[in-house]
Length: 82
Image (cartoon, rainbow, N blue to C red):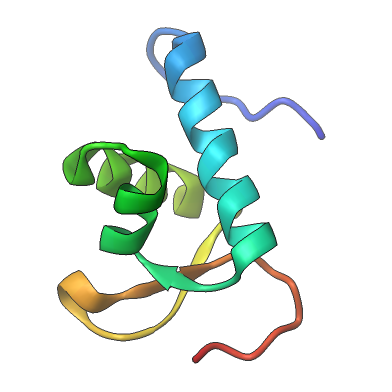
């Protein structure tokens, strides 16, 4: 994977690990809403939101349905969203 150019300070290892855990979860368990991601990984829901937005901006995850708080998140797997 190529290095993404970003502004500001480097990301902490905790942030890198959290982002990777979210991507792994979506790859293995499929699309799910933010609240379920938060519950499954034991991450505060607001940190989950920030991580998902960051990952979306990097093109690593995307939304595939739902609205507002019930938005369903996924990675590109070729599966249809629920």
